[in-house]
Image (cartoon, rainbow, N blue to C red):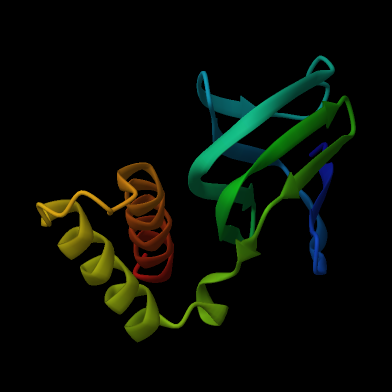
Amino acid sequence: MKTLTVSVVTPDGPVLEDTYEMVSCKAENGELGILPGHIPLVAPLAISGVRLKRDSGEDKLAINGGFLEVRPDKVTILAQSAEKPQDIDVARAQAAKERAERRLQSKEDHIDRVRAELALRRAANRLDVAQR
């Protein structure tokens, strides 16, 4: 079966480089499913999980925004951060989620709601990827 080379890179360095049969991710405009031979594409990524599929199973990553570049034989994800499920500290992510929820429920004026909403989405994404 045909495969795609998938490379995931963050400012801290490479996170993953391997071959897969399909990549599923969420762009800002909606879900994308990428197979070998896909037309070239560049898309901004949402805070979400990325599923990487092949015959031997499925790998997942928690992606916190960035960009996706697709070529017929290669997918490159340039992410602000990316974590494999085994690298996610679930207790830390749960604490971050609870902290963001408290900030959003607060009636104080000095709370940056946009920042708290982003923190909540990042924490929920990390927990979702870690628990699957």
